Image (cartoon, rainbow, N blue to C red):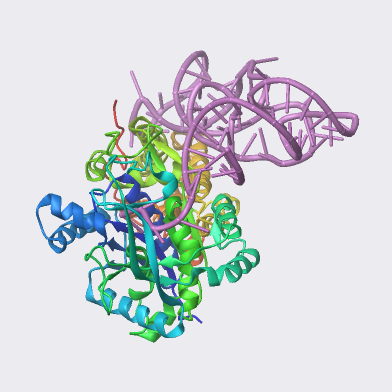
Length: 501
RNA sequence: GGCUCGGUAGCUCAGCGGUAGAGCGGGGGACUCAUAAGCCCUAGGUCGCAGGUUCAAAUCCUGCCCGAGUCACCA
């Protein structure tokens, strides 16, 4: 039992183009979960890249390189994006890796044996130019709605997954597990889809070759290939002990546009393989730019690396998680990021650290006084628990709001008690108690904020002079009075320098 | 077109049957340790529109308007 690890995944990112800030969003949320989970025990954060399919092949062709060369280049870009945003992944899987492909083939063989897949006809209108299938209803005057060229009727023998067979079981699972799909909005939509009925799913392609080759010809449908990463990466059929430690996943984080694949197809495939479904799937909202969908045609795609350079990775992480409820859409704007940065991070948090350490330096030579005021310990005794509860519910905004109550209370305490006056009046005991409270509160903030803004949280502790204690279990670390008196603080540069217009 | 979700103070949102709330921005005040930061006070908004149920409706029901998403092999 204690062997179990908290397993969280991001989608594997489709690399037909360069990453944008929306990709970073999912990874950041997953990273917060993983970082928190690691304070409680084992955790495993998986991310990676989805490298097959027509669009990747096309992108490679346009760039004049082989698909493999293209994916090698793009995967490296994605990995550096993770580093830039401090995504502490435990593994990064690429679907072109042998460890993944060989297991995909094994899945295919097993499904053949179990009778969950069969050969059928895959038919539809096909636009050769766009290499896309269209439904009859989507055609415009019998032509491709995209390029207006003629379409042709294509009919191929392909492998089908008997998805429809699992409809009743899916419905039952939804009924008995109301938290299987979150938020509620996504759950409702997927339930409605299920109630509308399911068709079997074509899981092979013969009209392209950039994919996992299947015995007998053709390649695996890229979506099935992609979904399987969640089990190939943790050793399914190759390392059963490892696999059992992680599976079923605690949560798959996804963007809401890919909910159907994760909440309907994926559990059915797992059941066909005799495996349990993931514990939950969370479909977060879309990030828009000034209210508009991120898209190349709108020209509003901006480079997430440049964004991190300008604002700092921690500021971007904070903004994304603080600004909106995790399930809902929200709009990015540089101005709002700047406001959050200056108001929350600079004025409230950074300045709190600064003014506290400056006064400690001035009045007590930067040494943590021996008097521990107890009132904050009583008031905020359950703050760790409350924050943790919010994180586990993926209510990141709520978690940060909880944490900021402590930030505000500490700032308020300074103004109410006026340490400069206590110093003038020689009220040594009161001054010590307040200064200790500030330092101890800041030590707490380091722990509480570490999942969200890891580098700055570490810097808070560094300026406080507390040792490398981030990552400790909160139940142990967040005991009021744990901060050692007599410790020398260091101070330092402003944590979040104010950004001007 | 079907379905889902939303439309509450300038902005972002909470409230979801009992005489309108928070944060930010804006305005005012007292201080000075601090990143001209922090603290205190201050927001008089037809709660999208029109009906209905109820002693009582942002809060339930109906219709409409507006926005977003989704509709099956489209990364």
